[in-house]
Structures are given as C-alpha cells and as structure tokens.
Length: 186
Image (cartoon, rainbow, N blue to C red; front, top):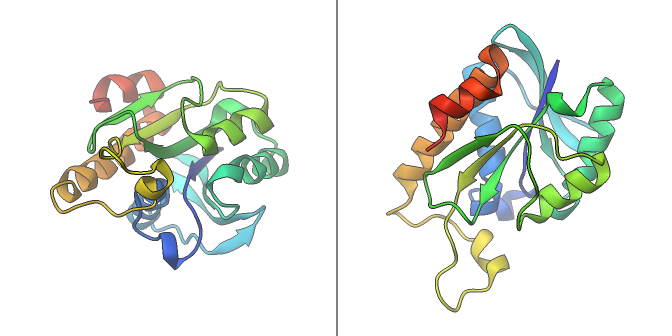
C-alpha cells in the first residue's frame, strides 16, 4: 500500500494557485483511475483505490500547507505503513514552470510543507515529485507569488508537467522510483 499526498491549501480561495499544484496532480490521478477523493479523515480529503496493481490512498491534506505533516503523520500511523511508501507531490520555486523532478529522498529545501512533513515523520527517506512553478518576479513577496495563478504563458507547460507527474507516480508504483526518475525527470 502507498499513500500519495498532494500538497496544497484547502478552500476555493486557493484553488488553481501555484502552491496547489499537488492537489491538481491528485485530482488527475483520481480521475485517471476512477478514485473518488471525498472522505474527510486524518485531516485530509482521501480516496482509496488501485493504481498499477498497488493499493493506494490519495490524500489532499486540509491542514494548510505549513502543517501538512500533521495529516501525513496521522495517515502513516493509521495505515501502519513505512515512510518509504509515502509519495509527496508539491510545487518547487527552484524549478522552472513545467519541470518535473522525482527523487527517492531528500531535504525540504525552501518548502515549508515539506519541512513540516520531514519534521513530524522524522525522516526524509520517501519519494517526492516536485513540479516547477518558477521564482517570483523581482519585487514580489514569496507568499503572494506562490498563492498567485499561473500566467497564460505558463499554463500549457504546467499542464504537461502535471500529466508527466501522474505518469511518474504510476511508474513509481509499477517499476520503482529509479525507473520513474530516469523516465520522467526533466
């Protein structure tokens, strides 16, 4: 069993923002595999199903980004799974819009949601799928930028990256993270 968590902020106010790209990827996965993500448990919207022969829990933490670890810790404890079986999908300002990076483990970088998860799980040894959202323009506050929407020049690249992220997650589940990295990074 795997938990696949897409990071974002709950509520219509944040729908479609750069910071909610993890939620969007979970929506695409759910749609592709006919999984309803509609149960509110463990501080997350959840859906259970199968992808690539693996039982999965799709999760959209509802704790707000900076406290994402609260939900992931509850899910890990409830489902009694190893940390290595949690896949986290999130935005990354250090990657250009449209770039996907899959890693087997690593630090939080500048991402507060990942800092919360790593701190509460007491591990950074879990796969992650980062999707580039680019850096804020000169003079922009970082918080305002990550909560902004993509401009029309970025939309197609970001949609393509989200589709590639879905395929990367499917590959992690069926062939492993190393294969997913070699096929879908870039």
